[in-house]
Amino acid sequence: MITESEKISKWLIENKIAYINDFNISIRSWLKAGGIIRTYITPKDEQETIKVVNFLNSEKYDYKILGNLSNIIIRDGVIFTPILNLSKLNQINQKLYIDKLELKVDAGVSIPRFANYVMKQEYSGTESLLGIPGSVGGGIYMNASCYGSGLTDYLASIKSINAKGEIIVRDKKDAKLEWRKSIYHENEDIIISAIFQFPTSQKKNIDIIKSKSEKIKFHRKKIQESDRPNLGSLFATKNLYSDIKFKSVKLFILYIFFKLMQIMINNKIYKKIDLLTFRKKINKVYRKCFQIDTDNYFSLSDKTINCLINNGSQKANDAIKTVYSIKKIVGEKIKLENIILDKIK
Image 1 (spheres, rainbow, N blue to C red):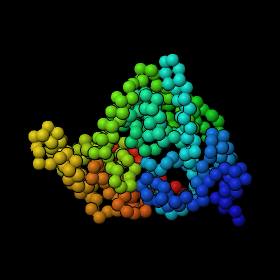
Image 2: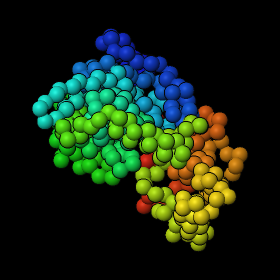
Image 3: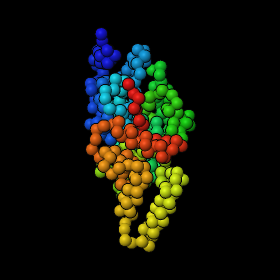
């Protein structure tokens, strides 16, 4: 008897739509852990995407849309649920008006590429986005932001496909953009592309733009993990240290000590240690509070406790177990920014 995966593969071959059999998540994921996706579909454009969605819906197959695996943990084992990846939808088209620069950006374009493109046109407003992993589609879905600037700051409209295969175009005001949330959390729409508009007031001297981006890169390098596989921010919060300070007496005292030492080091009152070295030491204490052993394959970064790192394992189930153990201490009010697919078939 033909299996669901075989039926999907047969249809994809007949319709000349690219896909990968047995896609290894542990090789491609930013966390470098996870199982095998049996059918990983990579449509080349909007038309193919609509065709695939209509087929899967007509057959009543469950499916998932994934970006570049930069904020997701998928369980170990074989994943039979078909996965759509829109990385081939990666075009940026430009229109220059008297009063603005307008860009049509496909969902599969990486956020750093988008940010660099805008900067090369000598427009400011995307410098802080350079270090955000992920695609423009995923960034809009999560309403991604960093260093006080957001991906959606200059967003004008979003094009998506609904569950019926229909094209839906929404203005920014209708996207229900909130902190790490959008209307796309509520519906089953698939983001295909977006229009961004940068007013001429954002046109700056290229040296000023480069200077701002270099300062952000320097600061990011100091406080964000870059040495080991990770998924960026673990929790959707601006300051996890502050958010958890009332969870216990120990965490409260630790937070007060942390803030006092930051002030003393920054103002050169205490000169025996630099801030980066101190952060590593204080984060070690935080890991103990989270009951994470030093020999854990999955742990928290030396630079920030809001980042899960992989110390050399391909077992995503261990990562998921670690995240859930931390979540118990952090509490329900602080939501995960990373997506966990531990129940996927």
